[in-house]
Image (cartoon, rainbow, N blue to C red; front, side, top):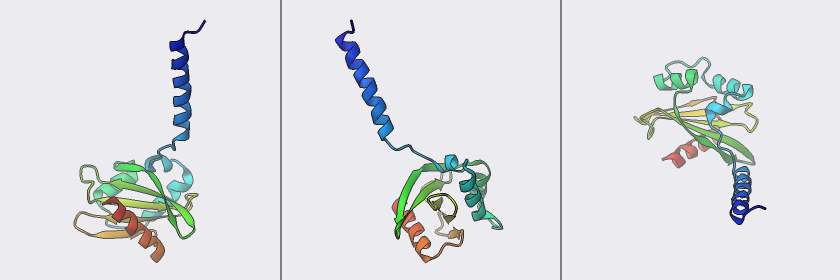
Length: 140
């Protein structure tokens, strides 16, 4: 015979497992870059680029950065993936914002520094630039 307390505990465990399944998983850029398509698009952003900031080089090489989970942004009629990475210990103003096509086949980036300088990667058109700037504004 199962006690009332055991039944309540079992019900709570079952409900908590359903609740965790319903919550979206938090995906970070370093995780997404384990997928070859995303990694290729990400690396393409920096091919041939000179004068990269040391912390950005470190992130590209070994994922040394502070990240926030993936978000989604509607641009036109298409949903893009958004990732934010900041320089360790200097997060408020030193960011890399990365925008991916839904399948990871193409990426664009906006790098911002605490001195107000910024730099685009991936040759974004005006719509993508506007979206990246809006993402930056949302992060302030």
